[in-house]
Amino acid sequence: MSAESLHASATELLETWRPDVESDRSLREAMLAFLGSAPRGCLREHAPGHITASAVVFSHDGREVLLTLHPRVGRWIQLGGHCEERDDTVAGAALREAIEESGIADLRLHPGLYGAQAHPITCSLGVPTRHLDLLFRLTAPAGAVPVRSHESTDLRWWPVDALPADADVLLR
Image (cartoon, rainbow, N blue to C red; front, side):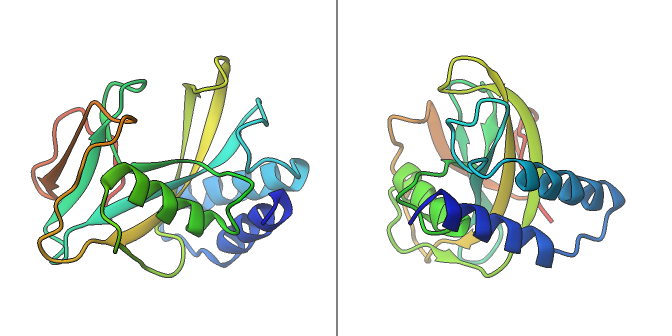
């Protein structure tokens, strides 16, 4: 568990990711270039920007997605957050964050990268930075009831075809 293992996992995920859309291919290359110049770029301490671990949590049947109303962002977004040095991989960080934020202990992590996004934000560092989100698909068991954590203003299931107007979530 270290900045090095997080960096290696992020690099491997991006190198093996084959996005269909040109804008995603461009983002992939930009993130790989960022990682090439930022050995500790998976940790929040890297103020110019850092890799974050996001979890798009679907219901067992794929009809709903679990979103959090983020207090700092002010919109409905996927679960996730900062990688920590105790995380072995970025995927592991996404799973940890999703469990912490949803209260659902038995989420299933799908292999590979689900997608990527980049967001300018003033996060817990208190200065403007950039979150380079690596997204992972997770599935909740049937009947899963989320429990809102202190990191969320609200937390709820939304039909994938009826997301709130201000939602910022990547669904494929």
